[in-house]
Image (cartoon, rainbow, N blue to C red; front, side):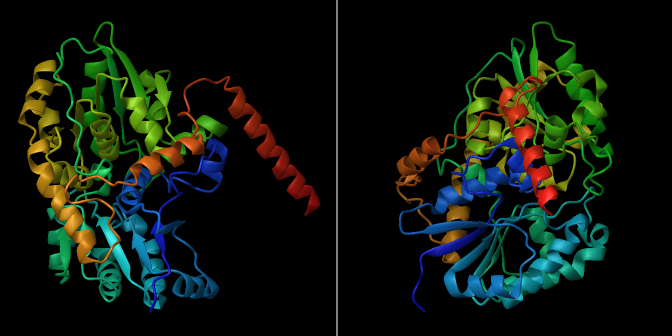
Length: 425
C-alpha cells in the first residue's frame, strides 16, 4: 500500500496553533493538563519533516465514518499516552481498545505509564488489569512493541503477560533531541526567583485534594515563605486551575489547598514553547509535577522533583532527575545544602545519552518516521519548526492579573456568541 504522508498523533493541538485561554478550555486543547502538551509536542519535534503531514487527534468518541477516514487517509496512529494505566482512565482504555481493533494501519503507543500510590500495581490496579491487557494486545497486533515510561510500568505489563515492551521514558525529555541543557552552578543559599509547581488533584478523584502530596507542599512552604528577599511564582498546569482563573469556578486548586499561597504570583502556560522560555528567568524550580520538573530541565535551570507516587518516581529514576523521594521529604527539611547535594548526586546528564538512544531505537523499531539525525542528535528541520512557532504568535502565559483586558474581552465575546446561539435555537 503506497504511503500517503499523513499520520495522526494523540494530542490536544498542534504546536503551531495559537489558542486563547477560553478556546483552550472549550476544546480541551491541553487534554486536562499543559504537561500533556509538553511531551506531545516533543514527540512532534522528533518526527517533524517536510514530507510528513501531522494531524492531532483527541480521545474520541469516534464514529464508523471517523474510522473509515483514518483507514483511508493515514499511514499510522501514534498514541502519546501518559499515566494512562490508572483506574480513572478505564473508560478511555476501553474506548481506545475498541477503536484500535477497527483500525487497519499501524498503531504505536509512545511513553505510557502506570500510576499507583503503592509498589504493587497488580493489586492496586486490579480492576483495570484486564482492560490494560486488552489494550496492549490490540496495539501489539499493529506494532512491534509498546513504549513505556520506566521499569515500574514494564514490570507491571510483564506480570500481565505483555512481553513486547521497551522502556523509553517520556518524549518530553528529548524536546531538544540529544542536547540536554546543563544548568549553571549556583549558590542555593542566595536564590531569589523560584518557580514552583504542585499536584493539588487526587489521582483517584480529581474533585478531591491529593493527600499524598501534603508533606511535599509543607516542605515547599517552609522553604519558600520563610526566606527573606525570595520571590515565588506558581506555575499552574491543571485545566481546573485555568477554569478558576478564567471563570472563577470552584475546585481543588493551589489557593484552596494552601490559603497562604492564595495571592502568590501565578503563571498558566498555554504552550510548551512559551513555558520553557518563561522558566529561563528563574533561579530554580521545584515541585511535585513531573512535567513541571522536566520543563525546568529544558529551560536550563536547576530543577528538583519532589516525588509522591509511582508516576513521578518512575520517570525521575529513569532519567536520573534531581529528586527527593517521598520518605526523605517526610524526615528532612528542604535546605540550600540539601538542594546542593541533590543536584550533585543527580546522574541525569550521565545517563541521558543511553536514554536518548533507547528512545530513537524504539521509534525506528516501530517504523516511526524519525527526523532526529544520529550524528547530531537534532532535527535539521527545527529551523523551519521555529519559524512556524514564531508565525503562530503564541500567546503569553496567563498571569495573575485580574484586569487582563484581552481576557475580559474574550470572555465577553464568548458569552455573546453563546447567547446568540441559544436565541437562534
